Image (tube, rainbow, N blue to C red):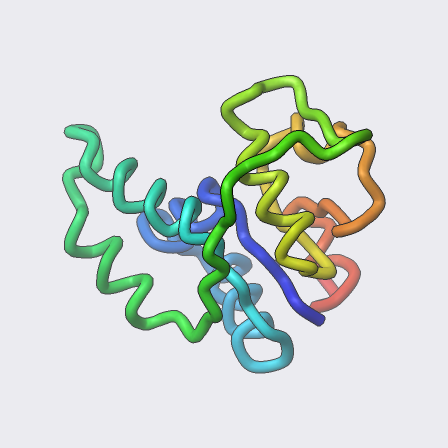
Length: 134
């Protein structure tokens, strides 16, 4: 399967790793294809620069250590039937749809509730329960 991670998942994995997150990243890296939108990678670096984190180099190193294919998001256009409550999330949703990934993993309930069928929107818990067994 081809899987995209949302920025909030990357932040958790990079700055607050735990056994479940580490196992999920390992399974995705070894058994599936990870795709990251350039928007998501850039947002990770931007968030890492916030004073509460101040971890830009750690974020860059984390991205360098991941095996992934980058998806260059084309100019954003409205897609009929594709909407999300927070307009700032639309480019990420657009990237997940246009990149052709099978699964988009996020902790943001707006994505979970946006009502699209492809890609499948899942939380970390849902992904782990279905594909890792816990």
